[in-house]
Image 1 (tube, one colour):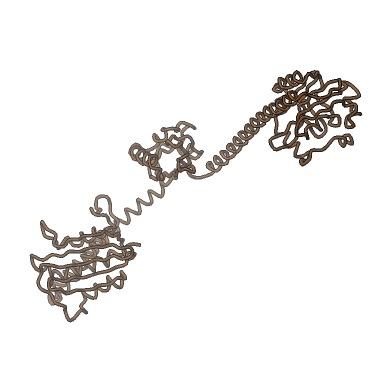
Image 2 (image 1 turned 60 degrees about the vertical axis):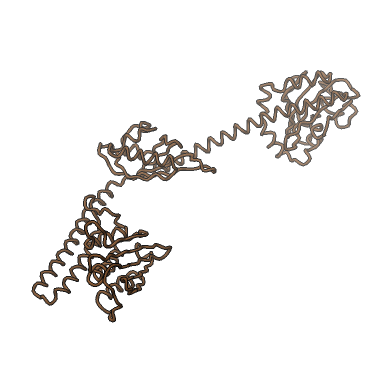
Amino acid sequence: MTTLYSVPTSVGFDEAERARVISAYDVAGARAKGQLDDIVAFAAELCGAPIALLSLVEEEYQRFLSRSGTDLDQTPRSMSFCAHAMHHHDVMEVPDARVDPRFTDNALVTGAPYVRFYAGAPLVSSEGVPLGALCVLAPNAREGLTRFQRDGLTLLAKAAMGRLDDRRTAREQAVSEAEARRTLEASDLKFRTLADTMPQMVWSTLPDGFHDYFNARWYEFTGTPVGTTDGEGWNDMFHPEDQDRAWAVWRQSLETGEPYNIEYRLRHFDGTYRWVLGRALPVRSADGAILRWFGTCTDIHEQKLAYEEREVISQELSHRIKNIFAVIAGLITFSARGRPEFAGIATDLRHRINALGRAHDFVRPHSAQSRPHAEQDSLIGLLGDLFEPYQQLGSDRIAVHGDDVRIDDRSATPIALLFHELATNATKYGALSNADGAVSITLERGDTLVAMTWRETGGPAVVDPDDRAGFGSQLIEMSAVRQLGGTVVRDWRTTGLCVAITIPLSSFSR
């Protein structure tokens, strides 16, 4: 390798870097397709030289990507004129190689083709790496090229680099696309492998909802041939009673981008229908556009049946509890018959039991037939049921206005006892004790508190009782303050009692 020391190295670029850049070019393709032949032929004609070459200088050899006037494919780099020319900023000229100390002993000078004159324009990559040169050779010495020839040779060298750069870009793009395809294929393989190992059925759709993928679990569950449920065929697998509903929910998700969530019956491979839970979420681009939907179907048949059985049992137990309230009320009435002196107390107690029964009946589990008209988590709905015995035909003696509040079974009992005591007292002593009186209840929901105001009008004049330690008053305090964590303020106005009740919002519902 000592012959390499007779030529200059690439200043600023080691041979590994040059080799990397050269490998990025499709030099073999350019040579095979003759894409540089017209440039080389024109260079020979422009400069009046019998030989023209486009050389690529590598670590040990210079290869000719195109040639005119010679059959040489390559030469050792030690014999390369272009290894010198590629480091010049413009055309390098050698008027007579025999007297140039760099080339006096060069085999191309001392032997065929007996080079005397040389002119070469450098080929430089976009990174600034010298690659080789476009050169012309002649067997006779010359004074040099004309300015027109030098400029022309420079332009031809740039045109040659332009074509090489185009092939490089095309090659890099092809490599990038191939890598992208391999990455996509690998990602797709990972997704399909992961999807096939999941116990759920997995599917995906295009942005318009066209189903184009189902995992192995789907085909195992449904028993359908692969591909037969693509597009809109998936809906045929639903129970006929669920198809319209499922389509409506799916269209709503497609139109709004909202998550898809529905329970429906899906045909099993054995011909039966099983309950499944269908869910899907959209995958969005950076600008929010939906790229694809991914969804799952989970077999919940056993859980659904167990839930329905629990619902039946719960409804039956709640119905029996309701009957217990009625039995207790009946026992109180029966017992009071033998003790007339306790008739008033028994009546009050029976009414309280009935109030608790109505509260329980409002929030308890119901069947579709027994469910109340009002929502079972509605405070206004509960009060409506509770005050029904006090209303008169054609008019509401107790009217409820304002903001509704969500309640649950925990708060229903103290609320029922609280307002039952107020209604009972109003019936005995207040606005409901005559035919003209009425009660207005206003509900105001705040961020953390609910204010409930009880106002009586039209009844007899009332005064502040001296003794507030009665059982009814204690029951109101226990319900509002101790159980619900609120406050109770009474205002004994001449027009009627006004009670301001404030309760934390969190006490109404878990």
